Length: 75
Image (tube, rainbow, N blue to C red; front, side, top):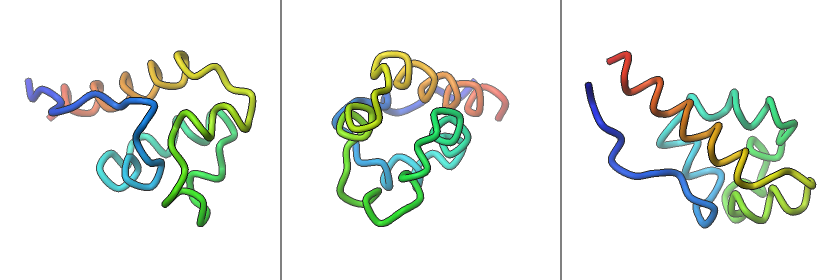
């Protein structure tokens, strides 16, 4: 099993998370965070995006980390 090098945190930039962990796109779309694919993704943190869209930050982070962990376990 390959361990994830870092945990996704609220301070990470959306675009950087997607670039490093493409599997997270599915999670962002699940939460209707389509902005993850727009020009704001390069400047906006996960926390800012969740707050702007009224999304529970802890739940979002949990789902993002689960998506990445499940992908690394399959390798």
